[in-house]
Amino acid sequence: MFFTYPMESFVARHVLIMLVHNGDMDARGGCTLENERLVEEDELGDGEGVGDDHTVNTTATTGSIIEGGGILCMNRRQTWTMMCYLITLLPSLVVSDIGPVLSLTGAVGGSCISYIGPGLVYLGLNGEAFLDKVGSWLDGWRRARGYATGNNNGAYTSEEDLPVEGNASLEIPQDVGKFTYESVTSGSKPLWYYLGLFPIWTSIANHGNNHMQKKIAAATAAAGGAAVVDESTEVLPPPSKWDFGVCLFFIVFGMISAVAGVLSNVYVQMFDVDEA
Image (spheres, one colour):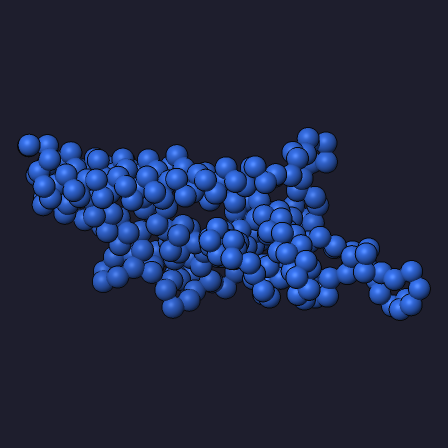
């Protein structure tokens, strides 16, 4: 075990680097289009270097970049490799029975891969549609009770609000029906909003929507401003209430199954149920 490095550790290291350092394995500033251009210019000798506090440039000699960003005498790549190695080595030295380890891994990992992960991905990719749908529900509830409501532009004006005669300055906004995260979270909200854990779902949807917009903007910039979506591609219908209901059910069911799996394993180990 001391001289083995499981292949899964490479995947774990990659995921950790993406989460913690935005995929910047070699401390070059992150996976951004601007940084990739500067790094390429530096390696080709066309730039003056991309150095910062965590990166050592040797452009005076070879024009290349030495990996940095680690601890002690190790660079970032070596640091995370050592951490993954110790994370897998130390439990194997302490735990004599691999059964509970595999059971816990199956309970948590299986729930995340089968239920929690797909649900979160679907909610994040359709975050704008989810916020719009929840916003429309809240808007109807607020209007029924005479509360102030709003959309992206602040005051929300519908066709029913426009008088036949009177103030001609009232206009229907161009983005009627589009609700942002701020318009959803601000103002009065009913009890079902909290009982249904919608503060959590809307936060996840907003986070996913923001990242989707950044990805689309980066892809558009990389394409020189051209459209990144082929207009000839068949467009899928927007998500329905049933789709979002299944999505939230997957997440909740996955969380419950993961917790139940961990607790059942702890119970078995504490009371030696297998030996009874």
